[in-house]
Image (cartoon, rainbow, N blue to C red; front, side, top):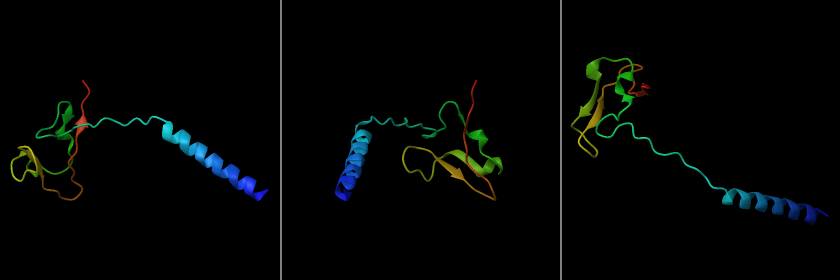
Length: 87
């Protein structure tokens, strides 16, 4: 009787696994916010605290790839942030 119970559990697990593996998964599209400049619709002015000189969204050195990077000089609770402005 115990072997039958274990066999049912294994069968149930395999059935669930098979059903899960055949489902199509949808993935979200990548959203580019910054790529050498802030993309259209994204407002870099939503960074908070700090002063204007703390943020440079067109920095030329150092650059990982492309021609610009973001220079940010943080102080207490400052952050680089974007918001999406709906018109």
